[in-house]
Image (cartoon, rainbow, N blue to C red):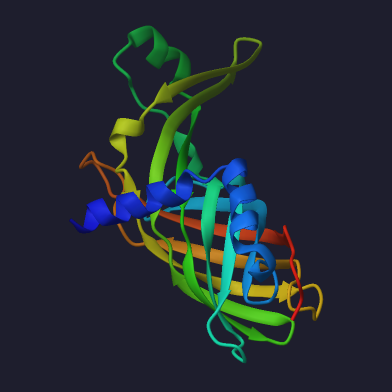
Length: 233
């Protein structure tokens, strides 16, 4: 039941598209980006790793989504900070390749490099405490896996060869961990663009085969830009 509720919640948030963003602006009206409810785009770069997997290296990714900040009380400096990373990858690079059961293929890529990219829709749910322009935030971050691919690469035969293998069935649909970090608001206005750095630490094994455990981690460098601003406080 808990997995069903979590999946339903994630699905509901993920299905919001650009059309849904327009509806959000229309629904909240003057309340949106008035200092009480903040909404906008969230994007940047992140570097992901597998925890506890020897031989793996970090992977650089781009991420894009949207955020909500909800003020708890009129005079509070604390907010619920949430949203969805709509385009978001985790995974690792620099790993040795493995056999796929084809002798010709295995011979070509035996000395190659393996990169794994897993697309996950993450939903951070954090408490954000503002201290002037600086803020700290922390909480949980469930995720719903979409695609997963292994990329076999080798520099040989006069150039670079690459083969993509769909491995989504090897990864669980759900991921979960804790997230937190620091940020800086670019102005003192009730609604302001901000930049920051967050770290995600996965606490569940996301790899189905019993050969080894995989837990995701990711360092996010982001910018948040409010859109659809209404009246200021």
